[in-house]
Image (cartoon, rainbow, N blue to C red; front, side, top):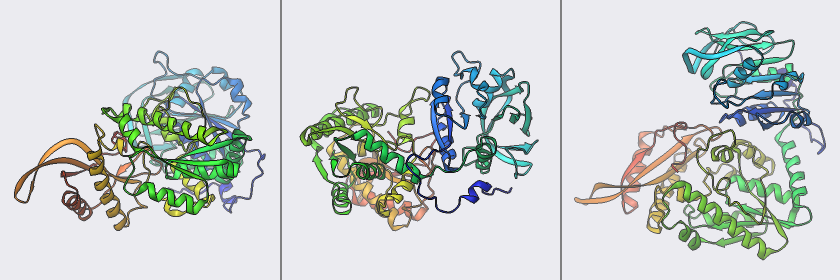
Length: 532
């Protein structure tokens, strides 16, 4: 299989020149039909240097046309087009004269609305599937006739609408791609946005460049410039505070905000007593000494632990922590005066997992679904549509240090969501000590950059052990390490027997009260990366 950069990408391979703030970028809109990976489609578009925006599937056509898009992509989704209340776009969408690409459910709903037939297949296609190209132009230009793609569907297009032709099929006879070249309407039954379709980017670029006529001008540099301008406008002549956790997300948001408003910005670092070992001191030192941004360190350990007292349900813990954070920020904003804007480093995975109108809730993130209904501060989230790796690229552009950029993600609720069950001071101390060993051994093994995350989880499970020839009774602890590209999916890391043995030996020997160490070999999905 030959997969090469599209000629337009090759022509733009040199570092992008500085882009004027008001320079126009071609836009492609992704209509979301409830797919967990709608943003992944948008991200693949951005990787092709084309600006992408996500709207709900039922966005008014006037709003859509107001964006002056060069093309539209219909995402996948969990529904069947024949389900009661199944999401459907306005049929007039297909009369706008714009290029449209439907992916999975997007193809099915397109076929359904344009006079084709969609229904269940005799055999559901899930996972890697062989695909045979019937027509290379325009989407499969330069690709081989036999390919491997990623499928995930029960329904499929059984009869194409008038004007459509088959572009590709699977070895099961299912229509894998179709199009109406005259109207520039195309559809894919497979998922080009996932890494399991390694040539999917070529198909998307063919749609963007050859069908839509987009120019590859949108870069992270242009995003930085746009975000700074938007932050400056949002803060106006007042002051702003940044919710600083010490992680790359909040640090990048702080750097953007500081570039926008300068000394009218103050970082608020809240020690909620749920941090990893030595984290509070390290964060304070880095930001005060390296960045020179005014920083307020709030010791709120007692009030957070009091708020968590008696809470064992993970959703209840996240909501309590999210609300308490806001109350602390409001108090600090009132003390500083003239502050009405709170900047947060919220990312898209936080948003999508917390649940949207079109996507199911996986878990409530404290900085999204955990926010109180009433807030005295206006929330500004410049990174809300980005993935972690995109944020890291922005951080490099802003000059943040590598040690901060490569820091493993750490949840805002901290160790509270790695303590399964009740949060108590003794359990926190036990988990904190074990987690420090995990991080130390991972760094010593040279795996810091190779792993997306590595941490410890304390279970509310007591287990029998042997210490000094005597019976012991202690906690069970889980070590979790995963690899990932963007946090939306993840695979468990193969750490090797020697490292696992060192972890188990050190934790049971050095942390009193832990009698057993387990290793989590569950990928995401079906599990999430964090346990709560």
